Length: 237
Image (cartoon, rainbow, N blue to C red):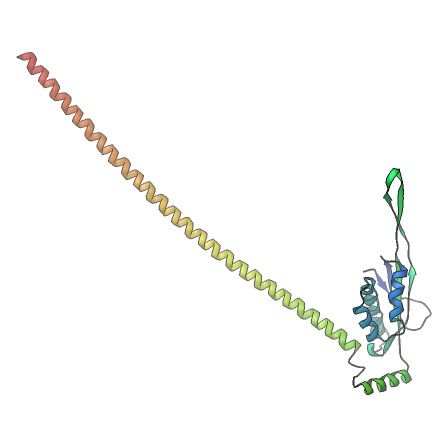
């Protein structure tokens, strides 16, 4: 959102100004016409359910104006209405888009300055509003400020729930990671045990082969000695 500042014009009431809003003044004026002269609660409700994107910016500007009235002028937000609201054209950003045959088309990015002025109802108007609300069976006091408090409380509750859910998911991920590490360690131990058994079998097989080779060599030496003795006896005879 653009910067919001307190205005200094001679028009009575508390104001807020959103400067250099990236929207055309024409689009902002269409929404401002809907809330001009409305009470704060009605204007806030209209902006909440509006489908125009600029409604969010105007709603923030309206909330800022009401906050200025409450903190600077000690006014009650339930007794305020939109005394004036208007949009002035801001600087236009000029861009270019390439087109066919080496031409270019100008692109104008409009900006505007949105001003919202809120003022307090007169005592006669407040009495008339209270009487009208009494006939409808609803109270004026439980509308704007209370709705804003409920929105803030609900937003905080959502943030707390989101953080708690994030922490819970983080704990579950840690437990799953720990279990996976334990499974990996057990698998590594089983693999090491199997490798040790295979090495032991290989060593036993090698020892048996060496024993068989030694026996074969001894038998061959004995046979050779017998053959030599037989040849010597034959020569002597």
